[in-house]
Image 1 (cartoon, helix red, strand yellow):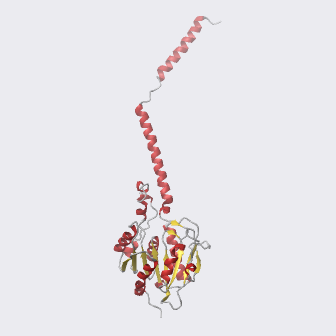
Image 2: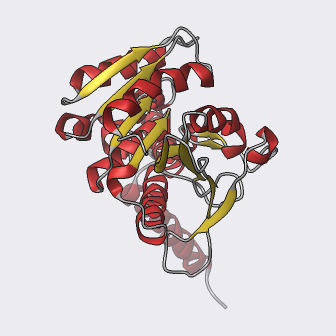
Image 3: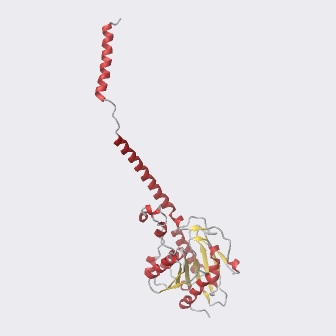
Length: 313
């Protein structure tokens, strides 16, 4: 039976160990307000940096949606305006599946420019259905008209359009005209309106054409992006994949060029067109139209055609 002294000894030893542990590790540290404030600031900083990176990623992946506003609706065709036409299906890839829809509107057999063609490239909004009036007005000049819907528009393949895909589609259409229809490149006048003027300029820099008609040129991508307050917070020079800037090609282009501008509510279109005209190389000319009617456009284009195309006999 253990003695009382022995029990006291054990209690003393236990107390000594406990006291030794407290002495070894000390009391729990106190967290200062400054440390808490710093930790909170760090957490907020990490969260803000993460949110900023997410915003950058969203912009990088979806920036084309700020430029392109396609419609898949085709409510009108040239037949709606009483014009005979042929619907054309093109493949800009090697898939073997038609992906681009186009309209071939032939000139009359006795038309002045029956051997020549206006290749029409519409803007970044809507579809070919919205261009029937323009096509009809250009056709009255006595010339064939060929127009396409880029992929993502109208009956063309359902993709998300970008500057690159639109350029590929314009090139595929040029190849169709020159290789399948056997039209001389010197008989092709490429007419681009809005964003289409940019794609037309890119095409003329890659392939031979008789002339360019550039109507109400769209602003470059960075100016479109900067209209969005969120985009102005981002390093656009690092993130931008879309450029939409025809100026480098215009400065080098020796192709005859006609620029068309007209008043616009935003005031942006005419200034961009005139600015690009000033930077473009010769030969060039510009016409300022009082209104943006298809008839006014056709009337402005007619004397230009007489300068660059021989009249058929």
